[in-house]
Image (cartoon, rainbow, N blue to C red; front, side, top):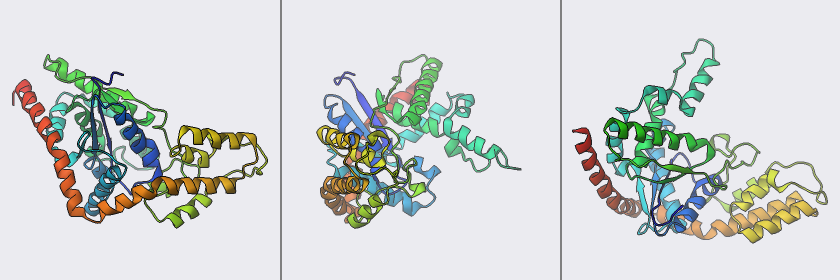
Length: 337
């Protein structure tokens, strides 16, 4: 990719307390990517309207939104060089979503993975309608995501493998609109699947998820996190036996925090024998505390003054709102509204 022309955009839903899966799967790769795109433009947004589909209380959405904002700031995100904003602070996103809906075939939404999975789950139940419990927010989720991407003509969208379809849909929707109005107004975005943006394995060996309660809080009580690390499920191999680091939850979590040299040393100890799981967990716990101790202090400072954090978010959103407004004015001219 060319750093001179790239516009990188990615978002995160505020659906829970920041945990190591968020850090390994989105936060750290995104911060690394925008650092390497210094000559381009970068956009990171907190998708609090997307969260309405899965988070039921206003209190939770507001709190989790603050926590995500404080998290990025604690890790050193520079809002002077990166466009950092709440989705709800840019209402032009929602106007664009309505416009895009008028150019999007319903059949495309029928093929969305999340909708199909929900329908399939209902079909396995007796006497249950195929669309039971499915709201229009879930059904039209890809259109709102397309609006997030297309509003700023993002060229690169970092995603995990399970999110590739959303970028493909954004490309499709941009194409539908451009052809309908005989314009090239929307740039067709490209997904960027990084090796580090993969499914993070939880403490119990399943996908790391708040719903499974198998996560490690980034800024939780260090003693509690050590206890949780000590409970990581492992096989029964003795210390002297060779072990596969790539199938180890301990190693996978460690490599999300450590530098390349540290990772290779840790890998070598797994592969050559002599490393017991108890010692490996101790090494992981030490690395976890070392990595997040200082950011945790900054995080607590931001979270201790919600009024100041709110001011920071509003100020950060201002320039993005101006850019979005200019785009919508051009768009209204194209569609005749």
